[in-house]
Image (cartoon, rainbow, N blue to C red):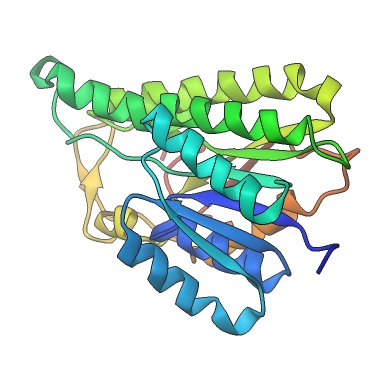
Length: 251
């Protein structure tokens, strides 16, 4: 038990966070499950029960600094250290023209997708640089939108581009603390958020088209791989996407 690795996954109650947390547990990690809905987090914990790993459920709002501080204090109190943070929690805004978007809709996405990652990274670094053995790893959830936007996606796309800048800065600034930072950019994983792809979504030329989706376990497996790299190696950017989705080329 003393040699077990400790992970924290935000947005662990559904989608990519849920599947990644379960994959980490199956791989032998003890995992703190963070998110806004306790019931959903408890469901994830129950699904991972047979793995033999410990799942700590901590409801938290990543956009609230006090809530984030309480989350990481709980991790430290329960496990004594933190080896891996999957900065996963994220939201989208309604697909409407930017000129029709309210400031509240914009700020809601920025507060969770960008400020939330900053707050969680800050607290993770404070633990990782002070623990013994020192160091750890942070993986930020970017998106295909970190490279190219979809129509009417300004808040989401802007935050995901910003996540790339945050990832690069963390990778640079945390070297001295033996903390690695990388980013996973995901395209069309089969989650509730991506279910609309199978029904048809707007394309750059104005058409509505059905897009291929991939098994979310491909994302979870990649997270386990990134988390399990030796301290001297870092997968700075990983893109995991449905093979035939219209991203590369001209569609």
